[in-house]
Amino acid sequence: MEGEGTMSTEWILGKRFTKSVFKTNFMGNDFEGLAIAGYDIAHGHYVSTWMDTMSTKIMYMKGNEDKSGAMTMKGTATTPMGDNPMKIVSTWQGNDQWTDTFYDQMPDGTWFNSATIIYTRN
Image (cartoon, rainbow, N blue to C red; front, top):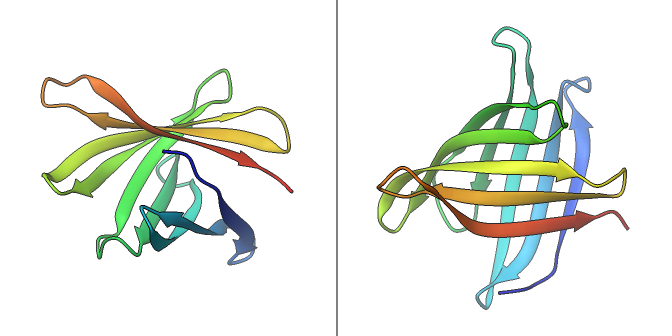
């Protein structure tokens, strides 16, 4: 499935965190998501929360960048089949574009590429 949407991001709380609002149409329904992200100095990793209009769950993720600059965040997603481990790998293609690749962990422990979002600054 392909589509288009918008995401706006702003610094909040003295530039300690970012707030991102994502809006699109998903399977014929309006969809809105909200993310708060930042770096947890005490624990030495990045953290984010996610909530959206398809669920009442708040997802918490944490992770770090690798040597190439890719960010891998891991957490637990709520699906129709129950809670499921997931990860998002973010890679930057310059100041005006990055890609989020979503993976769901299968019962056998392997990771399934469930979605990809390409963000481009207007």
